[in-house]
Length: 158
Image (cartoon, rainbow, N blue to C red):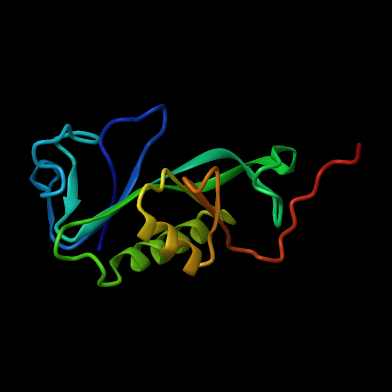
């Protein structure tokens, strides 16, 4: 496992990558061949896969809130999973779960209690997120997990 900051800045934020397997140039990824590169052709990735993270602010549902009622949402800082990608031939072997567990370790080291997965497009990843204790919101495109389940988001008195 390799951890490093990606070169450059995307949308005014730095991106931290966790790569599995041997390091290789991002342009060599089978998943990206013939596609526009996500970050930079000079970045490295893992031969098995990778996860990109950033610390971001989100407008997300409070604990046990109705996802449709945005009055029950609040602004929060979270470790944000920007994407998890596993190379063909390595899917279904538990690497996605390993990367989620790594995100939790990183969040705890940074003293962050919330992880948000932003931009989930795959139904299998949605299912995995639910299995790992995440709660889907924003029409299922995002998922949230509170690492301190006893923490209650409190509103200031009106």
